[in-house]
Length: 90
Image (cartoon, rainbow, N blue to C red; front, side, top):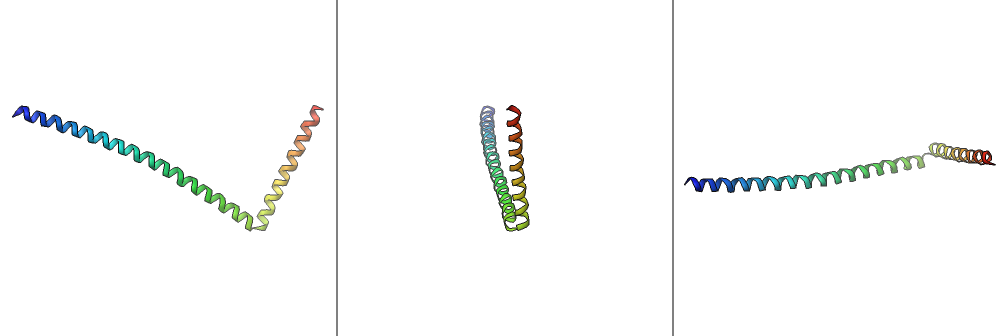
């Protein structure tokens, strides 16, 4: 009788250990899937925010003018810097 109970106890422990391993694997898979979903949602939100900003800038004449003015000033500055750098080597 004692030997039979010992076998049942060992089998129960093995089944419990296998169940724990399976549940840990499941948790790991769920964690990976959740990480992917979170990254995807963050990327989608970022794209939506940037698109909204560009749309607002394009629909507002004053904002568009300021952006274009800023870009033209950057271009003029870059040209000025490249000319200065070129003349320094001549």
